[in-house]
Image (cartoon, rainbow, N blue to C red):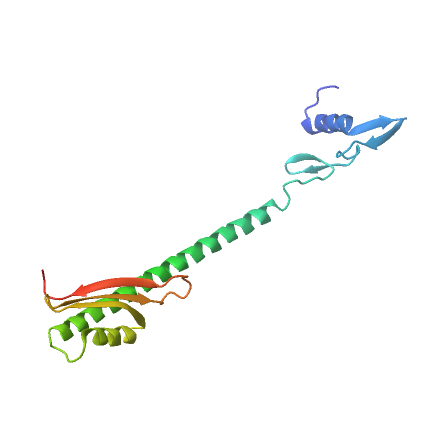
Length: 165
């Protein structure tokens, strides 16, 4: 084949030679390869049989990226719910411990655990345990809060209030 300045002509002639199978004088298509004369010029060069193997790959890639972003956002939402739930449980436990400590020190009327349970209920949580210590005039409470609606487990916190030491 003579050398030609136009490499596309050489490529076309090479492709025509490789793509046709002559059986009994009739050109036929080779398995998986189109017959000669079905080549089309594209931006990337000569494309046999107008096959575009990467056609649609951008759509699949963009769908995959969208799915990854949605998954990441859902994970961040669950993490934010866990943080909010822990903060609410901690605030309820702190307030209940302070109210219970006031009741232990007789600054407020009532049983320390009952007072702590009332404060916990007003904060939308549930009192799990209450342990007043009259000797050191302190109280320890444990609280569970279901503030995070997406979480399968409740957030919990423990607080102790009383004199220092």
